[in-house]
Length: 256
Image (cartoon, rainbow, N blue to C red; front, side):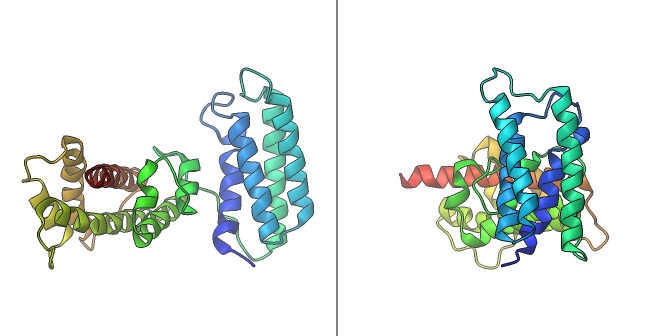
């Protein structure tokens, strides 16, 4: 069965590990991340029944790289392997795009402040470092909001990413408000919830830092003329993820 979301991520994954696109060639391209990403692309191609010869070529190359570097103390690819990897990735992207004909392969956003591998995992609803061990403690709707926000970041849809991130946080804040005050939320919006939560004496100072930032952003985000750029959207996502970690960790500890 064809999965449009995975097709988009195939192009993103391959582009993100292309050594020629790394900020400092030879310093950030490691065998382990390349091999893991190549195996993921292979499996995605097979799941979507896209030219098994390409998938086989990717698998063979990943196995060769893994075998060559697995016993070395340093897993950074040498210069010749970086060059070969870059060349092969460009070829695979062309072959996959040709196979899909009218279906475009989108590359990920230019490198920002966020780890793209973790964005891929978040967008696929997998446990990830942004939310640490609270990911599976969140509701399905909250996880979907953050997965969608991650997809928007990868697709360079900055304003959408920020707005969806804030929507996911509002759901969490409503739970947290009841947890801290024992009162019903009623029709209170996110700005009011944050404002009241900040008046509670025993609230975490770390959480206060996240909420102070997001309280101002929430009002600006709803203005019809407001748009977000990459750094702003990524910062909102980071702050929301931090608040979510703090909130769920506190609620989990209280129920233990």
